[in-house]
Structure formats: structure tokens, C-alpha cells
Image (cartoon, rainbow, N blue to C red; front, side, top):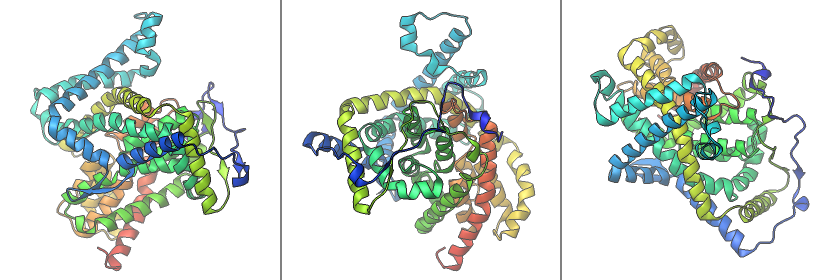
Length: 486
């Protein structure tokens, strides 16, 4: 589990001999600031950044324009969204089945059909093939409202279908439009250059990873994954960097934290909760990237390596270099409409690939939480630890933290009725856990199968994250209480 060979691939490119260029402003060939590429970069950057990086207040919550767009689509045409989700589920199950039968020699696809179906894209393991096929039946049952009561209950179908499936089927294709504008037309280079002095020394990550992190916090972890996958495929990240970004920074988005805060009736201390959550996330990330298993993942690339240049200079130099890199990329990139269309198409394909896996595993986790004492039994040994840490309702806190490993909303809402201190502690921990079985784990395993991310490695990282988060969140919560902030 800990050895670096576990993640190595014979057909992947070693990063041992890859070193980024070191540049100062005098070493940079500044592009001629022609009007067309400059406007192209500025439009693509401001549009992409506005829709999924710009925080706004909407109906009493902090969210982003993309979330507002999704809410509008849901409220005006929910049936159409549900039909689209069902079609995407069917597409994923059918395309995976065709691909698997082709690779097993049961059927033979000619070259013309292979070009259209792209069986390599849909190929997966037999368990994940089964997940995608089972999800078709689950989705059809939940969509039609036909099936056993235990499956159609609000706590099961209401979360798996109405929340997770509908959110994912909107957020990835729509988010793909704006992610692609940033990734293709200079936004990635611009933000990456500016964030380099922070991300590299603190987290051993390229500055461009700040964009992935912001996408997760202000948009969705699925958008963050999509952006990371996009850069990974271009040679912009190696395996270690991808693993670190996805497991350390793709935490709960601010909209979800706000929704849980509203459910727990702690919106009056929401800014404090967000501050504690961000501090806890940064502390844990700075620790985890320096210890196994993350430190043992090889620095391999799956495409021609394109490491971020190491730039040194004044703040003004950084801004000039960042703007130069953004305009240069925009000039070389495709048109804005084509980048947007390609982002939507790629996002829809990715959704079809992962939606069935998430559906099946999420439903299984929710059934365990809803109809068994699994999480309560599992939480029993941790009650004394919560008592030692001074959490007012230790049993509630222990159950919430462990349930959060199953599904973020389930874990956080366990604390309904608890004291303010317990609520804040639970929200901070569950928001920063980043890895949970109902969605993020299956999504990472399926989306990054060429690293590969495996259940056992992600489970180990979840345990390590939680073990670090619990005392850190307790200390931060008590500190905020002593300071009179909560």
C-alpha cells in the first residue's frame, strides 16, 4: 500500500528527470500585447472565474453563479434534468457494456464504430462495470417512483437521486464549459503563476493547483476533479500532485457548508465556521503531503511533461509574467465558442462514465446508515476521545464524524439538536474530510484509474485525515469559543 511501485505504470513517463524552467522577468519573452488575444484571454478568464470562482450572496447563502444557474435550471425544468440524468446513466451503462464485451472478445467492433464508441474511454474493472449497470436499474426505479419503500424513502432516494445525481449531472457538464475556458485560454497559467509562492513551499504543489482548490471550494469537488483530470491529461501534473490535490483540497464547497449551517441553524457564525474549516484544511494538507502514502506516490506523468516554470521576482514581475502566460496561451488556444462546446461535451462524457458508480455506492452507503446500526457501533470506541477533547455531546460528535465518511450531508446533519460548540466542531471536521464513500471515493477511483487511486489507499487517507482533523478542529473550535466568536 505504501510502496511507490504500487502507482507506477510501464507506459507512463518518469518525472525524475523533469525539472521546471527557472525564470526571472528578464528571461521571459513577453508576447506582443495585441488586442485580439488580450481580449480573448480577459473574456475567457473573467467569464470562467465569474461563474465558478466568484462568491455571491443568494437566498441568504454564500454560493457561486454556477450554483445559481443550476438552481434556476432545476426550478424551471426539473423533469428535463431528471430525464437527462437517466439518459446519462443509461449511456454510461450501455457504453461500458459494449466496451467490456469488445475487450473480452464477445463482440468485435470495426474501426468506424471504435472511432465513435471509443471503447478505451469506457473500459473499466468488472466490479465497476457491475456498478454502472446496477445504477441503471436503481435510477429507473427512483425516477419512476416504482420500487420497495426502503429504497424510495427520502433518506435514500431523496439523497442519492434528488441531491447527488441531479447535482452531478448538472455541475460537471455545465462546470466543464467554464473550466475549459480557464484551462484552454490562459486562466490556468495566470492563476498558477500568481499562486506559486504559496502552493510550492507550503504544499509541494504547483501554483496552478490553486485553481483546482478554488474550484472545489467555490464550486464542487467534482469540478475540482474535472479540472485536475484536464491538466493531468496535458502533462501539467504528475501522479503525486494529482493524488495530493484530490485528497487534500477537494473538500466541501462553501455552498454545501452554508446549506448544512442553515440546517443546523448556525448561519449567524458562518464566517467563523468557514475560517476554521479553511485553517483546518490547510494544516492537514501541509502535513499529509509530506508523509506516506502521499509522499510515496511516484512523480510520473501520463503525457508529455509540462511542468510549471519556477519564476522569481517582485510582485509586479509576477503579475506581468502571469498576464503574459495567460495571453500567450489564449492566442495559441481554440476559439471561445469551441472551447465552451468541447468543455460541455467532455463534461457530459465524464459524467456518463462516473455517474453509475457514484449512484450504486452512494445508495449502498445510505442504506447502511439508514437501516442499520453500523455507524453507531463503529463510533462507540471514539466516544471517550470526544470526551477528552471536551466536545459537549461526545456520542453525537463521534457518530457524525464517522457518518461523514459515508456521506457529507448525512454526517453533518447528525448534529441537529446538539450544542453550538458540537455543531461547529462537526461541520468543520465533516467539511474538511474531503474523502467519503458515497461520492468522492468512487468518483476518484473511476476518474483516475490510470494512477491508480484505489479504495484501500483512499480509505487509509480518510483515516489519516480524520485522525488529524479531530484534534485540530477541537482546538480551533475551543479557541473560537474562548475568543467569543461562537
